[in-house]
Structure formats: structure tokens, C-alpha cells
Amino acid sequence: MKINTPSPTTLRRIIQSAFAAYCLFIGWRFHAFLQWAAGNGPEAARPASVEAFLPISALMSFKRLLLSGNWDPIHPAGLAFLIIALLIAWLFRKGFCGYICPIGLISNTLSSLGNRLGLDKVPPKPADRALGSIKYALLGFFIYTTFVAMPLPAIEQFLRSPYNMTADARMMQFFLDMSATAAVVLTALAIAGVVIRNFWCRYLCPYGALLGLVSLLSPLSINRKKKLCIHCSKCTKACPGAIDVEDKLTVNSTQCIGCTACIEACPVDGCLSVTAGKKKLPFWSIALGTVTLLIFGYLIADATGHWNANLPDNMARMLYGRFGG
Image (cartoon, rainbow, N blue to C red; front, side):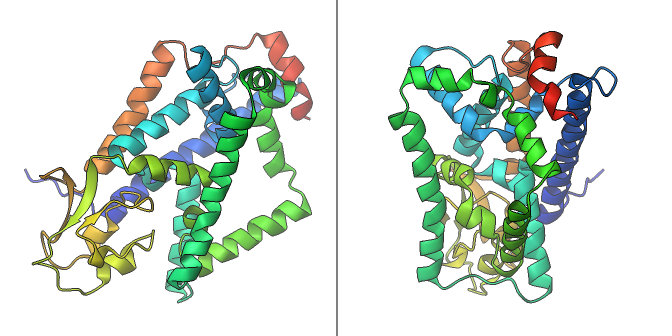
């Protein structure tokens, strides 16, 4: 019996939506934990997956791991998640951005809305390059402050500080008790996402910039057969990263998220394909590899004791109690 494979766009939306729903579930569980810590609710465990939203702390933990060989006991899942994301970028391009990241889903949704309204635009190349440099500048700042400016003792001190220990609660507090300034900034970013294609991901996300640089080492790429190409520009128009796919024989760009929207848009069968060296792969290979590596990485981290912080109840209440009021 033949099984119908969903289109690249449908497959991507299914996976993104599933992870977005999981993130909402984790947020709900973490809120319940904070209520318990404050004495306002039944006992609830702290979900370690919330640490996926602490990339700066994870970056510092990564430096500590490289210099001392010690895994961060404060936010172990955050460090595990960073390493998994880097491995995904190395093996499956920016599959994390294309299929897992909930912010990517929001950015894609805003861009799709802009497209339906006729507002979604790609800036002229000089402006596009200038805007694209912002996320690399931000990445450079974080890399410099973490790996150059902060010695290991300073990293150790920060990781053990009450501020870092409760960084996840502070993050939730930011969204639940948002200031007027933060609301205005987020609204402006949302409007920019409607007007300019994937504004946040392409221009401002330092995490995406890091994964994009690592993805240049990936064995996978999108290849175009020049003899089959009819230069209809549909692949370029479909690309969330605004890559000029029709002008490249091999797409190996830091903007490529492995979504294969270009392959879906191409009207010529076999013109565009995912390849590893000279071997042609099915379009869903990036999605499958990304999800498999994420789940496999989690299982290894959990089985080896590198996922849960396992805070004693009295310490959890002491650290998090004031955030659950």
C-alpha cells in the first residue's frame, strides 16, 4: 500500500506545531511548579525542558565544560540542549530553526500573514546585508563576553549566582508581568515580521547566527541541476531566508533552514534536491534527522544524569518561592 508523504510545508507545520504545543505544556508545568514553590498549589516537579530557553547560561556552561570537563549541575538540560542544537546544525543544517524553534514558527506565521496581505517584502540587497550583520554583531558580543572577557572563575561565580539559578523563573515573569516598554518592542518586532520576510530569524537572532555558521560544515545541501532549471524564480520566492536559489548550483548558506520549500515550489521534477555529497536524499531527510537527533540526544542526556538538576524541595522553595505569588 502506498503511503502519501505530506508536502514539505505540511510536514514542517506539523512538526513545528507539535513542538510549539510541547513548549506551551512545559510552560504550564513550570508555572504549576512556581505556584507549588510559593506554597500556592499542589506539589509539581520543575520541568527541565524549560532550560532550552536559557541560551546565554548554556553558552557559559559550555565554556565551563570545555575548560574544566564539568557538566553544569544548575541547568544541565540547557547545556545538553545547546550541544544537541549544534550537532543538528552540523549534520542537518539549521533544522533546529526550521522545525523545532517556536520563535521560528511565530516568525514564519507572521511572514505568511504578510504574504497573504501583500506586505511581505525582502529589502534591497545592500539593506539586506546591513540588517543581516546585526545578528552576527550580537553573536560576536556574546561570544566575546563569554569566551574572551570572562575567565573561568567569573563563569563559575555567575553560574552559581541566585540570578542564574532562577533565570528560568525570571524569563517567565518577563512574559507574565510584561512592562509597557517590552510590550511596545515585541509589538514592533511582530509588525516588522509581517512587513519584512522572517525579520527576527534573518536579522536579529544570535542563536540562529551561531547555528548558521556551524551549518556551513553540514554534509547536506540543496543542489540545483542547471540544465533542468527554467529560471521561474519560484524557488527564490518561496525561500524563508530569501536565498537566491535559482542562481546557485549548491545552496550552502547560513540562512538555509533546511525547510525544502524551494523543492516544493519548483515546477520541474528533479531540478532541486537534498544531497549528501553526490547522493540524493528524500526532502524529508532533514526533518527526520533533526527530530531523531533531538529525541536521541534527550534520551542520552536523561539516561546519563545530564538532564535534571534534581533540586531538593527545600532549596527549590527557597530559590523559586518568591516567583509564584
